[in-house]
Image (cartoon, rainbow over the protein chains, first blue to last red):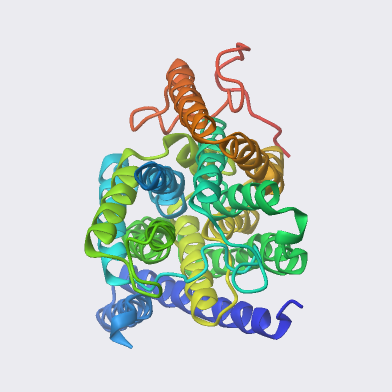
Length: 66
Length: 381
């Protein structure tokens, strides 16, 4: 009656996606704030990855794109 | 009749908008990532845009709850009319109490009540009610809460204290995404209602999509509703449940966004309102030293439980009167107008708006009746 498999998929994917985004953004903040040059570049890379994830979200929201 | 239904549908769309501003914007407002006015303006624009980019209207507005079609009952404009009255009245009552509750559930509830009066209890599919409404209402906040809890832990483990202000910038993006997703879903409901009414009245061909003016007015109605901001609900979500820091706000919104997008694309529908309330509670548990006000959470949960029965009761009453004929419909319309105006007038006795949205909601449910000391903590654990 209730689609438990579907629910588990939603739970797992949302869990992984949310944790990944928070992890990336947190790492970005940490490395950006560390002050070292190399770390700053890595931090920016993390922010870029986050931005891509958000863009993927926008892509999912707009039905005419897929 | 058709004009009346369209007007009510747009009014519902408006209440839907201001009810749900909180889902996306309560946390950025609470953490100061966005100024209250700016936040609701962004949400309004994104809802407007969202309403245009997706016009995939659900064919059955009730989502299978009511047995429509060949072997079932015909949903008439009168039923939709009565159902909408139930939904609007309940949305306004929960807004007055500052409770975040699902507008879709209010709409379903109103229609269920109207259908029961119009066609008997056989009109309702109990199995669908359980699997589409009751169980998801339990699962949604638990899921989002768990995800938000873990995300909060990660955010606090990785960052140092002085770096955490940066989460404010991230919040702007995640909350905007929630708003956009909301616009693509919720304005569609009203478009569906109006289109179905037009089809039922013979103004439009069966199976055709919504006309452009329908999309336009629905988009505007939900955007106006969003911009007017359900400050009471924003205050409950942002301040009433737990104190929110920027890192928590970001974690909660990431959890909300991920859960909503996953659920709407993998076919297991979860209510936006319930997901975002769950996220806020989850992040409250996740930060050391934060406390969740379980009494407020309990009240919200109670609100969810009674949303469908309450809205269906009003819907049933309105439907019963409306079936008496033209006079009944007039009585309904007048009564609805009186109740709606009454709630607005009553709400002005204790205004909550962009200016005082940051104050603690100590007088949470009963405005002005009891005088309490100003900063009393409510039900701290």
